Image 1: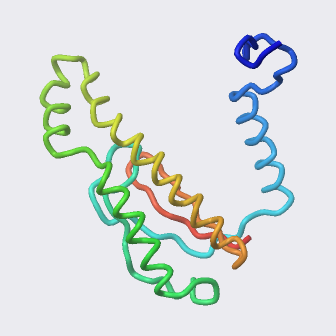
Image 2: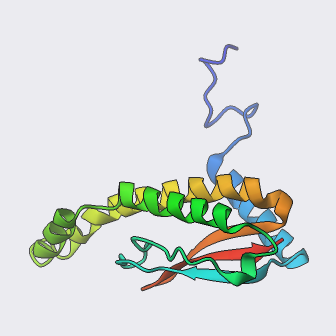
Image 3: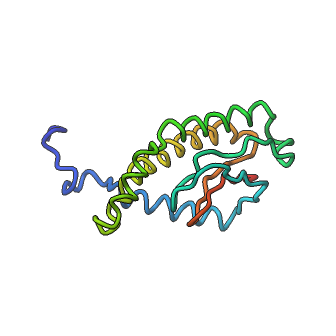
Length: 160
């Protein structure tokens, strides 16, 4: 049977299901964290405009002293500048927010989803940046994660 004729959803020879794979990876990560918990070193607070449950428009570029044993000030500045550049590049324009809030009553607040599309791009590309830096910093024993809650978000640095 050729590759083109293979039905990826029903063919038993192709066991990959992206949803199951993501679930398995989450379970493995949860087990790993129970066995080897990450130790929080410091958090970088957001310093810009927030979207409801999304990232901030920028993060503080002040070098925390807690990171001195792990990364240099220059590396940190390059990292924060790249994070802030990615956010600025994909952040929704002011006009998008105005339209979303102006039509929110008429659309039963469905128009608030309009900026959310761009915010999802911000989160996706921010994830790519963090993943690349984590690969770079893995040998130094440090990991950075993006954490968010309802009205705030931060970048947390962990010791592996």
